[in-house]
Amino acid sequence: MSTWRERLEANLRLTVLLVLAAVSVATIPGLVYPIDSASPVGADPADDVAGSPFDTVPRDLIDMLLPSTVGALEPVEASYAVAADPELSVAAVERDPASLPDDPFATAISLLSHADTEASSVRRFFSAISAEVADWAAVLFPDSIGNLDGAPYSSRIAANRIRVTAESNVSTRLPVPVWAPPSELAALPYRDFFTAANARGHDLIYFDPGANNGQGSWVELIGDLDTADRVGIMVPGGSASVVSDNFVRYALRAKSFVDAPEAGEKLAVIVWAGAEFPSGWAQEGMATYAQRAAPRLAAFSEDLRTRLAPSTTVVAVGHSYGGPVVGLAETEGLSADVVLHLASAGSGHGVSGPEQLDDPCRPRYSMTAPADLIGYVQGSGDALGIGHGLDPDLMPGTILLDSGFHLDDPNAVDDIGRPLGPLAGTEIRGIHAHSEIFNPGSGGWRNVLAVLTGGSVVLEAGAQPPVVPGCAP
Image (tube, rainbow, N blue to C red; front, side, top):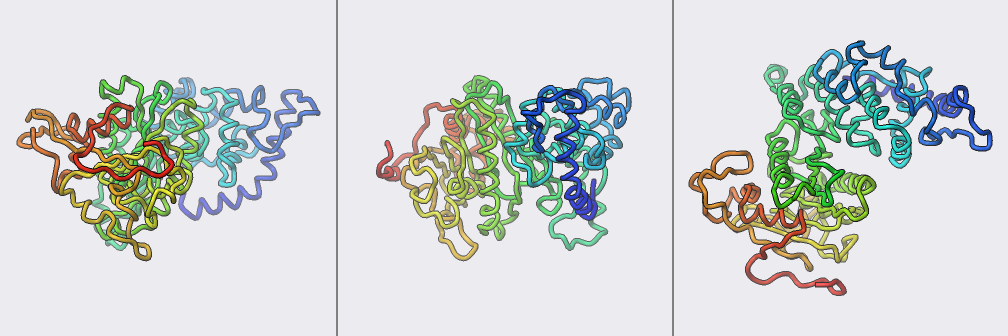
């Protein structure tokens, strides 16, 4: 993996190469394929791609950079082969396309992955090339493609598969706190966590191993966007890092909804933890994490929308600390049709009513189980950098949902596959209710599934918040 100094030097080199890259992108295709002078190729690599060297398999690069046994494979198979080989993975991740300025394909990838390139340009570039070429880009330059906004999710998943393997083999990241002595660093099992991520088959469309003090941040796709007519974006609570058990828990939770018979193979869920998340009650009371994450979530939702059919319903779900992230994203242009606050810490720092949200009439739901400790901090007030705004259960226009009971079967399992045992048939309430609302088949789980799939919900007993003036009941 590149050090920060190497990345800085690469960025400086890239600044110098941009002009050369623009010229290369503009002129090299014309040397190979005659181009009408009335329609010259522009410096934007998304322009006039079809029929150019960018839209053909980069066979010279493949033969130069990969072993022949890997290069002979189809690109998806090649991504698995590289990901299975630590040495090849590290080499691929450390490969900088800017170091190959004489190759037009590498130059285009270098220009696309530059921080100043708009996601719309990236989208246009990849829409003009074949899926095969895009997947080879992921194999050859995984560090450029893995988190590239606008790039196809399938290519990003392939790239991140390689990046996870590389991360598993190059270093042990710093723990929390960052001042832990070196003697403790050697014992950290972070490599094992990253290795297990690939072994379990997580489809990561975003992976930042350096985030959260080296514990990693991620975005994972569960389900098939090509067949889904409803898509959930599930934002986790605190301690959302790749090396925490939340990485596995939220994947299992999302999968339980996607695999439910009621979903009819028409639901996909994206677990979005693509930012720094707090850890522990002290940090989780701070608004700054949500304030930084919210614009990124909103931008992600906008990019996601471009990948979906216009009729697809997007449901944003914020659990615990994820609630204020979703709430603040609603002030930043969140592209969602429905919002669900699930045992949510709040509506977002400074948010006191629906008039502050981008769409006051957007359907909103909230579920907080009885005696869930989160209820004691909801709506507790905002101070400088502290607090999460209005209690979502009091937000006008919100529909309050019942958290219900566990399945009356001791052999039924909880959200990570353990038998319910004595919990069977009991009400979801108390300290552990914060997670028990995800137990498959329970009343809380069925209500979440109903919101995700557009089914019938069970309302909480008692009064509901008032309707927002001017919005349909």
